[in-house]
Length: 274
Image (tube, rainbow, N blue to C red; front, side, top):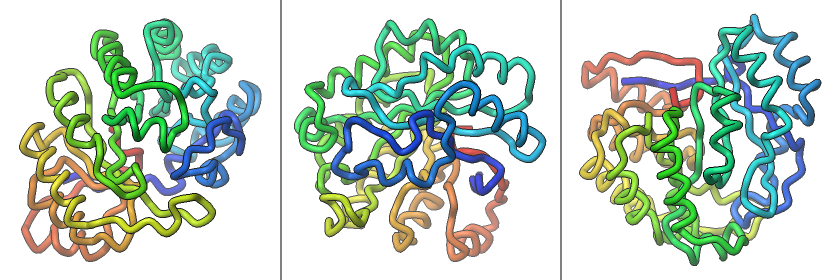
């Protein structure tokens, strides 16, 4: 089993700094504050030059445009240069994409693309705040499936104010695809300063989603991602029991649990899409 522990070896960079137009209800830009700013190609190039011998790779992400897309186009050339001149692993978080984005993504040539998938139109409108539908997210998956690019969809369990809404549908749709690398399941974190700071997450419902995913998709393609409430130790143990490929930032209790089952653990200091 893989234990993903990115630490300082796999930093997250934001191409918009702390800025995001959407201010989604579960985040409100909070998580951008913890990312390293790389607000233009020059800043990104400088960061890579100064750190390429200290890190294994990086996640390139940022705030979203009103369309739901992360504005990556201005970084195409520098990303291609980094890809060709370093051995760094690159994961790009695109936001909601369509056919017009595939050309620049292919030229950029990241090792992995991460994309959040929402299976409920009502959740998209209530939480993300854009006039798009679940079909737009499923269309993005179909576009990636045909592209030849390596991609890993992410599902946020409980995204709609803690309620399970479109998660089942999203898993069903992804289960019909063949070319994705990993399906990463993460769990809503009730974050202070957001409209969801007092939301309660039903851990039993989270477990039901983890089980359902393992029934629909080969567990060797399932990963429990890093964004989740740390108190939910039991879902980590469940992922172990279900034969998930890996867990990002497993607790010490879970590592002991894995050891007790005589399961070999491989530590990877990367993002969990690898």
